[in-house]
Image (cartoon, rainbow, N blue to C red; front, side, top):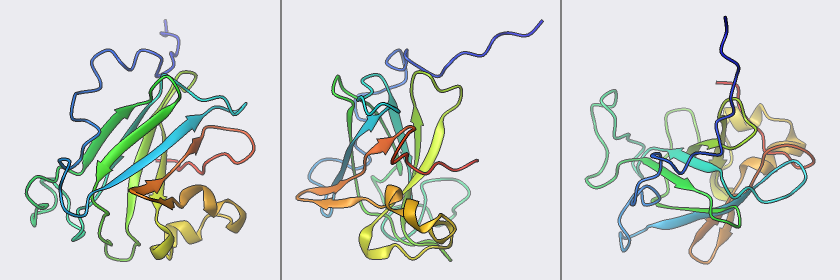
Length: 172
């Protein structure tokens, strides 16, 4: 007998977020920027019970991970997790990632939300470094869904889960 599938939400607030999850670096870190946005569903409604996770290299293109023997900068964990608020908004405080061999700098993103059987995975690219083989493989008319826009204190990256203007998600 099989167990029926369940969606990955809406119980994300139970045990998954932690107090400093949205701060990949401490506030006041030189060069820190906010990545902020909203998560919307197929009808364009904001999703108040989603969660976003980010994983990225430090500004030197190094990861805080055992597989990267160089290690990341002290105080840079490279991983962030932020639930959306009642208005579907999230925010991650981080440093801009450095480029990786053969790839433009980017931030890997997982989104968890009600109605999804599995997380969806995408990337955040930045306007000034958008030349990347993965990005180039995306149809030109959809690439814009992967490129953040500059704001006063960082970047904005909205996620549309489906429908017109749907964010490009990768099969991982």
